Image 1 (cartoon, one colour):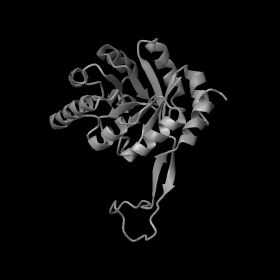
Image 2: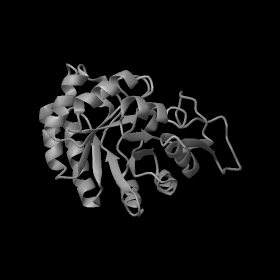
Image 3: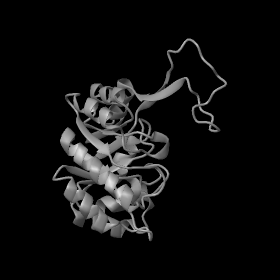
Image 4: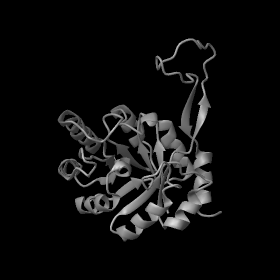
Length: 246
């Protein structure tokens, strides 16, 4: 088995490594499903030894139908990722009809110059997952991150099992979304999938002493300004142990 932590910060990358994970997917914008992190974050994360670094390339939240300007942004981000010597990049593009945008994907994959490419959960909102699987294999992607087109990977077990059978070792399927210590072993046993993506995050309390509770950084969106999510090594260890049935 291989394990990938969805890391929202350099601190989460360090915790993922210390917890024994194989790889991290570094991203910002967690509430939006992950967006491209800053180059400074990527460079700092790259300096961490002992763990592989994949970076999500997603210029905004929302759908996966991108404008020419957004594609240009992604191409420039790939140039920076090559410069930073990351181990892989993570992206996915769809057409208005909900199919894999093969033309744009080819352009992005070509720009990635041989580093690992993961097609992310844009797969989970495509029109026909079986056709999309074959197209992504033909494109040459290394893996697909998917919840089986369900709200969580646990709920997506039936489709994950069918997709893994169809893939027949031609591409790696990585189960993600809602994967935790309570369900990872079941997902592994029922789908025969060998790679898993999870966050292993806990809410950290702010160290601020003075707190102005009347101001929200999100404007009309009310959140707790004095706590933040971060991966912990202990939680990573618990999930990996559970995956192995220990």
